[in-house]
Length: 216
Image (cartoon, rainbow, N blue to C red; front, side, top):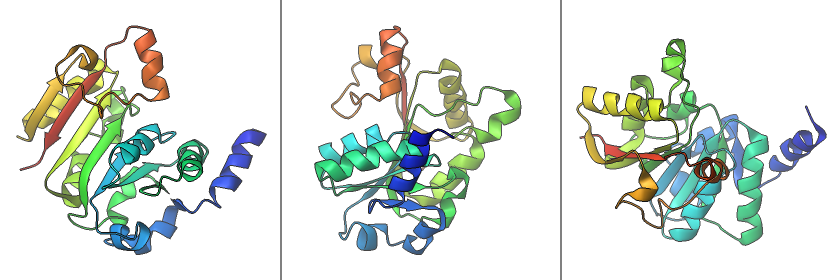
């Protein structure tokens, strides 16, 4: 492991806006009250990477709380450090495996979920690892409030098609679908937030897919 990664791992462990692994379990059902010290809605960004989306969402919506979730602490370091330096208090980060999410959030505790450019896990043998596979959707359904939306942005056309199939198979409510977000009528300040990788894809003229859906 490189020196920079080791340094970031050590530094992120001291950040007040980052909780690692089991440290987040006592907050189950209490994230707004005990972590953010308010009663505002809680929104998750899954597989948040450097946390760019979570930090930008927190800036746009100071009346909401945002939690970026990823397992790689050296990536979380960037978003957490930016939030601390800029005094953005309505965003935090949780370093866990997303498979364990039910251990950290209570039934109906979350208002909305963002999934931004996740690993598409294209191999058929790794379908269960896809963040919109049925086993993950069932977890989201548990922690989301009734009507809470899931937003997916991806450059991977196969992953987009797979997710659409699952939405149809499970008879979920599909609110928005587009295979070319930035040439559609759906672009808003929220959807115009671009991660490092998204900017890279756009320079390569790659289309960006977007889905918004919810459970009954």
